[in-house]
Amino acid sequence: MSNIREKIEQSNEIFFDFLNNENYGTVKNIIEVSDDVIFCGVGKNWYICEKIVKTWLSMGIKCEALDCVHALHGDLGMLQNNLKKVIFFISKSGKTEEMVKLLNIVNDLRNQGILKNVVTVGFNMNNTVDKSKYDYCLTPSSIPYSDVKEFDERNLVPSLSINTMQMVLDLMGVEIYENNPKMIENYKYNHLAGANGKRLGGDKYIETVSK
Image 1 (cartoon, rainbow, N blue to C red):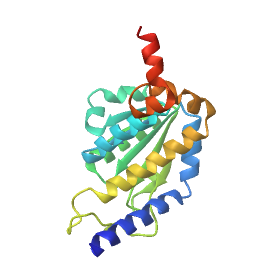
Image 2: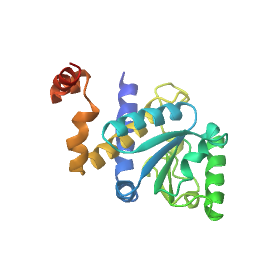
Image 3: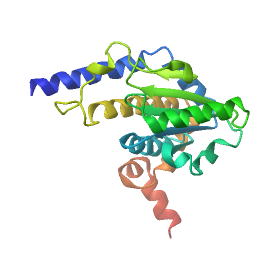
Image 4: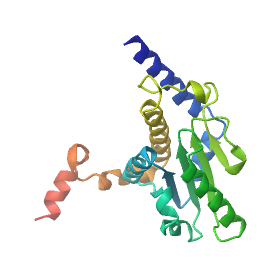
């Protein structure tokens, strides 16, 4: 049990290390004036992208999830409308092959002027990745990537790392939401059912309009 506790304590340290990254506040400010945010990942990180999208949408933040593999089979079209977009490339190692391939393609399309108004953000656990490929990079600095712990003894199962990264994005979304009075006011219209709906009176609204 003590080993698990140490791993969770390390995870908490990494969480706050992300928040202390010099680019955290800058990225958050850019998102607040953007038209859309895209979370991009592969494998387990893809499901985290989907979860973050659901959370951010519930607060009124426009966002989408992009699978790195599907992106090259048509989904890349979500970037080609000249709106101000921020795209997060999410990976524990920062070196996932499919993600790096997509990043290189996005950068090349930007250089050609095919993609415009796209800001790239690298979001990973590895401070040694090539940060020059991104406009901004969010990584922890106090713990080397080789020392990042998961619940399993061989540190192979994405568990602590993936949940830590999710918490960072959850917090960023909440901070953006709480800095926008209109989002706070509209939250009740996004949650008409369930426990939140009852707390905010959404259940009564549904009952009224359903008659």
